[in-house]
Image (cartoon, rainbow, N blue to C red; front, side):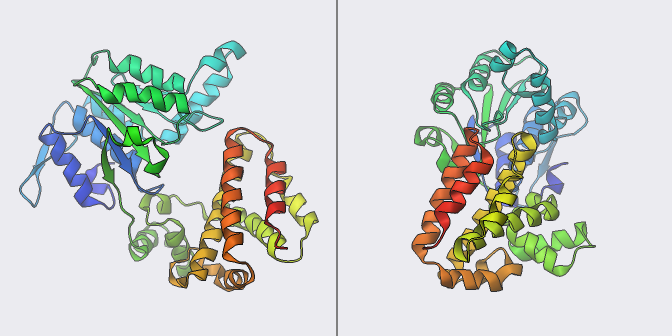
Amino acid sequence: MDFASFIGNAPAVDQLRSAIAAGRLPHSMILSGPKGAGKYTLAILLTQALLCQNQPRETLANGQEAALACGTCANCTRIAAAMPLDTLVDEAVAAREELRETDKKETRVLIQTHPDVLIIPPDPPQLMIKVGQIRTLIHSAYRAPGEAKRKVFILTASSFMKEAANSLLKVLEEPPAYAHLILLADNPGELLPTIRSRCAMVRLGALPPHEIEGLLAAEHPDWKPAQRQLVARLAQGAAGRALNFDLGAFTAARQDALVVLRNAVGDPDHTALFKMTETYRAGAEGQQKTQDLLGALSSLLEDLLLLQAGTPEMIRNVDLIAELERTATAVPFEWIEAASRALDQVQSGMRRNLLRSLSLDAFAGQLVVR
């Protein structure tokens, strides 16, 4: 992967590359954009360009000099090894499970394939960045680089424990001259205002659906046009999300979401509901399955709002438009609003490891239209 193969947001990417070439890359920066927009990939590419031992450059169309990465030096190759983040996190979590209980509680998930690049993902099972991870960041930030001229810290999510967020402020207020912190955020509003005010903001915008469909046609020629159209809408303009979209998993999750929705707005069939929610068990597999279900529910509720607002051309679940139109006329706006708040509560409960099946049953019970 290199800058030439990075899809979309060329102006923002070129601006960052020019800042590296000029030695003006901000020490604290938030990369924001929808999930799958390429924030993590771009953070790795920028880190390679910043630490590359060969420091190649190219001239852009506007005459500015922009940084590249050679991709072959020791720094570039070790940084590139961090690209498969999900795999590395799974390996770190598995290694932690092998520790004694006393050590397991004190061990936080950190990814480091280069001694001067530390990557901090949300720590399972709560999937939030914790104070132990930030303490490691602070300890490392105030030690001089070992092999490169700079150090880079990549925080891959904006979900922080309160104490962790407060601790991060310490290094944001007085970052060492050689340190760069890159925060990735689907929703920067989750971050404390004091964190946002200390960081430069770079936004990765969404690609239009027709561009996403073109990418999918090249990547998945076996997909039907209707499938490409659906995935392009569901990806919300994020090329990476579209190209890696698991249509089968989403369809299964959405089918369960429809059970919840139909149970609320039609004749309640609690037998079908309880049979479905009983499959949402504890463990990592159950956690992912629950996240998929909540994401599908969220997309359906948003589509109902769009239909009530008179903008059917913006809905995502385009293959369900007939059923969604019937539902949109059967429920008031206040019901959709209450359902969205209840969904937020379920998502919050998942972070606290509440029993999934009971949480989903309670959520579905709140939704019944009376």
